[in-house]
Length: 112
Length: 112
Image 1 (cartoon, rainbow over the protein chains, first blue to last red):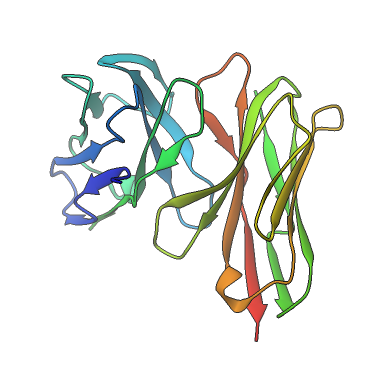
Image 2 (tube, chains in turn purple, cyan):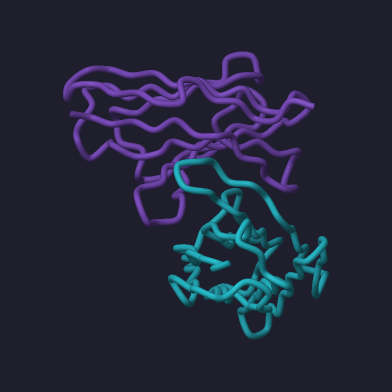
């Protein structure tokens, strides 16, 4: 049984660099979500896909952020021109339609 | 806009004690509510999911209840153990929404 996986688990980058994260959902799940969590806070929604279509984006998702799910399977989240405020844990989740969401281990991003 | 609040923010109890964690939400049009556990630096583990038509769900020593009319959910942990020490998060999915809205979490420490 494979759950949601994310890669890398940790990423340290310098301000201004671009970073890309990958999420592999549970195979039969048609929905995939990205959330961001800062220290001491609950996760906040960024965006979600149903199959390959990106159906909703939060206002938190600035123009520097882009997400894709090209074949309705894995997804990537790219942050361009990183800023120190982007430092956070980026969490991916998947679900079968509107059922229970299962989360991955997260990618911790540190921007120096 | 849905707002989710968890009180207390932190809780310390001796091993063996029964305890209740509280979650309140402002919009009663809940589709479902999930309780999660998060260990430091890790992803979220789903503990219980309560559908809007249900009043409670049980899993082992955990029991979660949902009262939509009062905008409250509780997570009851029986006979707490040091291994229960973690942050517990509740999150609601609205009837008209597609993302989970999280509370800030309750950080639980169970002392041996």
